Length: 221
Image 1: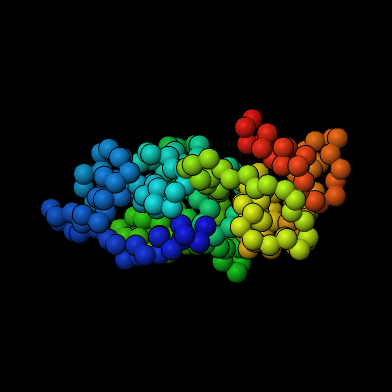
Image 2: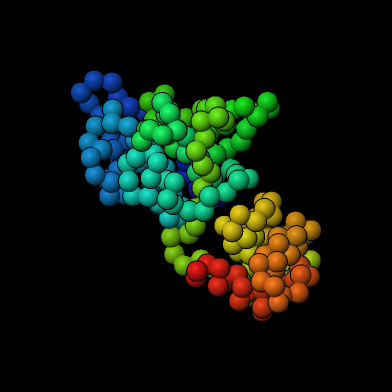
């Protein structure tokens, strides 16, 4: 998610213009992603900003201006990482209203969520929201076909194939830590967790042909 966060942070400070004029930088988030109805910068644009950043990063996006549309994009995860989408409720969990941004981390007391997003104080900013208002964390997948790496990968393996494996495992809500391209104990544990999803597989933590076939089948399901 490094690319996604870089794109988002490059927009920090982009803000609405008070009065009859409207900031073209805000409006471009809608025009460049094909979202209709965002003709003024006073119209809520948090989802539009998240759409634009995801689109620029080559990731799937909702294509809609409402925050809760992101509940249907990507994979719901329980251990969010920086760059995952975080969806909040507003007024009540049952209402249609919400807010959406990109997860950055939790406060030391774990009561607030920090995220970078649009329309936060009428600008792109880093803001904190109550953890109790989180509806979901969503991990985005590439807009193009997901790369399924070839075998064999195991403890000590390094490189882009390991990054692809780590990214794929995290999309299945298997926590392997940061996608750093180093096949260590966390990645081995993630592969073992994957292997438990098919009874006839040996649970050895080695990413081999049979494990690759299982991984591919799970994304085709």
